Image (tube, rainbow, N blue to C red; front, top):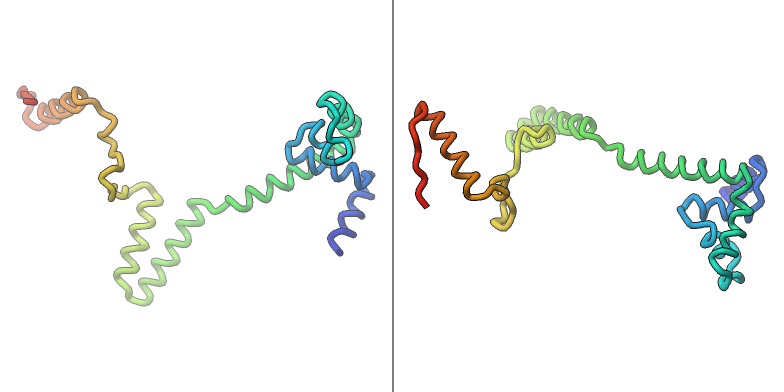
Length: 167
């Protein structure tokens, strides 16, 4: 209930009625003018899109309502950013902590695991495909392209001597 009272106070300070607050919530969720109006007024479900859209537009014209929609959306975006703010830097710090704990406890296998994870996070170590159905970087090459790569490697190793690839 305290949250409801707080919401009512917030609406009162920005000058929106409960109906305007509700439709602002619908608009902030991405509903169209018509859909938001129909949801606000269930008894008007049979209105045409044009009529329901006109009803929603009456609400949308209010600048305070538009400001509230932007506020709702920015708060929602902030929540999303906070949820995904677990970054590579955070992961690296946690791996470092795990490595330090493993060192302190003289746990060699845990040290190796922490080092491997740090390397993977930094792109220094690439996991090999465990499933034969998984694609490797070479899967996208044509046979002729692979032959060209092999010829180039052979040239570099043999000082330019020609290599014949047999099918």
